[in-house]
Image (cartoon, rainbow, N blue to C red):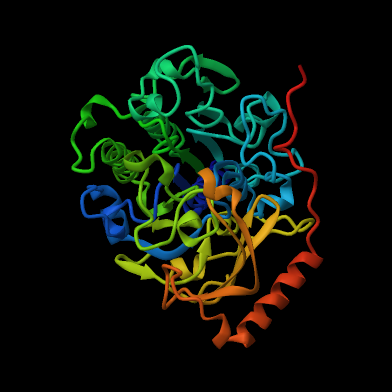
Length: 467
């Protein structure tokens, strides 16, 4: 009898240890997402005056992508693409009439979409979102209705809910911003926690919530989505970062975000989680150039937020996973935020939805140095219009349009399309369409095939709240 009991105990211990080992081998995921950060705004991407030691170290210890793309040049569509792995036109999260969701919008991310958080929940993950959401502010669209266990953040952009009877009129309020000029709500799950949100402390508080979540869930797999609401204007930073950057207010904001990245990575190291956690840093779109010194830079890339030139959609992309991703790697492989969806689900042991087209591909061969990226093509949409296509090194512009202001009304169609070799000419200065008709023909075939299989649902962005 005693011998049988001892054998049973041994079996139970082995099972427990086995379960613990399996949990330990299931990777954690952290996605840190800036808002309106330009390709040229970080030290490791060539900025001469903004100090980003934590992101620079992250890149030195991991992999830095030089050809990494958001799926859109504005907020709502790009965030939908990240969390669904699908072009925004497939989910109805784009529009030719309203570029993003607003406080008076009645739409949001459809319940039929399978978010990254929902897919990871099926694999036993704890999930937390801390920051700007912008995929719908009504209860059914918020993070806790779309796969996240908990949420702390603002439901849309930090410049919305402007109080027109408070502070100076027009752009003056943005150039000398005060918290009380806006009435943006800060939410905890489904409840308004603070209104207006104190944006001078918002980066720190997002970070603290993310760090606390990591510590509380360190014994099981977790997914942390940390979408900062800055450097979207109006710009705010904490007191510890005031007047610290040589780049001025904008630099102060970026350097606080860099501090946030350092806090997250230090927490993973201190909690013994670093070698089992994949961290990725990027931005939703390029810099908002119309705000001058309050906007960032796309470096050598053309233009910025709101357009389909490279500066609008090519972003910093940094991957970090000690022991898995070899340090100091610079990847020239083509990749996108949509690929994080597919890659994370695959690494978790989950299955990619088979009842729909998923545009993300698994880039783990690139991350682990075992192969090239399966991605060969990027589609550049503005609303529902396919403006350009990149295939390999070549980018064809069928339509070009300015980002904001008077230039935004100038839409020009090109036949033949403008053609650039982005490996030779990332600034898109030299149109070589006359020299490569065969490339134009090849990309046109890709465009035709893409349109044939595209089924676009009605736009969620065009739904207004009923009065």
